[in-house]
Image 1: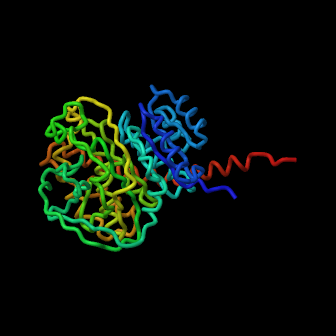
Image 2: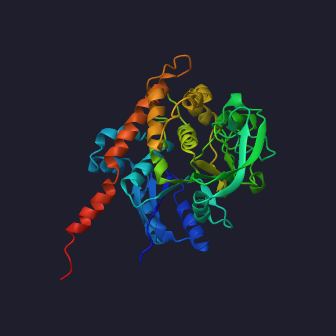
Image 3: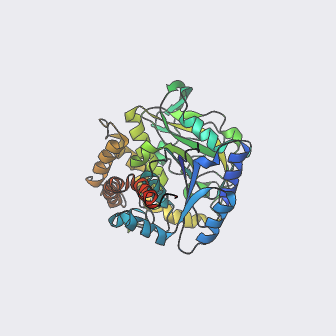
Length: 393
C-alpha cells in the first residue's frame, strides 16, 4: 500500500530554491518518508522554473512550480479568476497561493512553510519534529506577560525582540507556568544565526546590511513552549507547520502590492488571526524546535525600513482590534469571518494608513469566498482525469 501524500510544503522563492535539496536530505537522513511530501514552489515569471522542476525530479520528490503566469492559469482552471487579486505580486505574501493549493487537494492534512534562505539543522529531524509537535499531548511551558505579548526570544540573553513585536509591549514582565496541551494546530520552529528582526531593531543593533550584528544560537531556545491563552506572539512563516483546519484563518495579507505601500507584516498578522482563533477554540500554537539556520542575504537595512515604516503604527494596534472579536466562534473559518468584519467595517482614521486595515478586511472576506470556490477542486479534477484513462485490455 502506498504512503499517503499528506504534507504540502510551500516555499516562496526567487533565489535559493536549491534549499529544497537540504530539506529532502534531512528527511531521508532521519528516516522521514519523503513520499508524504509535495513541494509547491511559488516564484516569479523571471525565474528559471524549468530548473526548479528539474531539481524536484533529481531529488525524487513530487511537486509543482507556480510563477505568476502559472498562478493566473490555476485560478482560471478553478473558476476562481475573480480572486486572483488575493495573491500580491512580488511579495512574500504569495505563500497564500500555497494555502489555496493545499485547500484544493483534500489529501493534504498538513502544510509546511519554509523560506528559501533557511537550512535545517543536520542533527534535527525537521519534518518529523514538526509532525510530533502537531501530535503532541502533554505538559509544556506556558508563557505570559503583563503586556499580553510573548517574546519568542524570552529565553535568550540577547535582549532582542523579533520582527512584528509591538514597541509598546517591550520591557514586559514575563511569567512562566506549565499547562497541558492536547490540540496543537501549528508548530513554529525558531531560528539560529540571523535573527528575524525588523529594520528599526537592526539599525539599533548597528547593522546597515539588513542582518543584525547579534546572532542567535541553539542555546537561546532551550525549551519548547506555548503562549498562554489571551497572549499574542510573533509568528514567522520561515519554519512553520500547521494542520489543514487553520487555513481559513491563516491568510497572508496583501502586502507590498497596495496603494499604502504597507509590507512585511503578512506572516505577523496572519499569526494574530491564528492565535486569536486558536485561543477561542481551545487549541494551541507550539513553539521551539525544530530549529532552522536563517541565512538572510545582505541587503540595505534602509530598504527594509522603507518597506516596513508604512505599517509600523498599524502593527501597534491591529492586535487590539482583533482581541475583542470572535469570542463565540466554533471554527477557524467563523473566527476569521468575525475578524474580517471587524477590520472591513472599522474606522481607523486615527492611525497612519488606517484605511489599509479596511482594505485587509475586504480581502479577508474574499479569501473565505475563494476557499469555498476551490475547496476540493483539485481532488475532483484528479478523479475526473483518472476516470478518463481507458482501462487496460
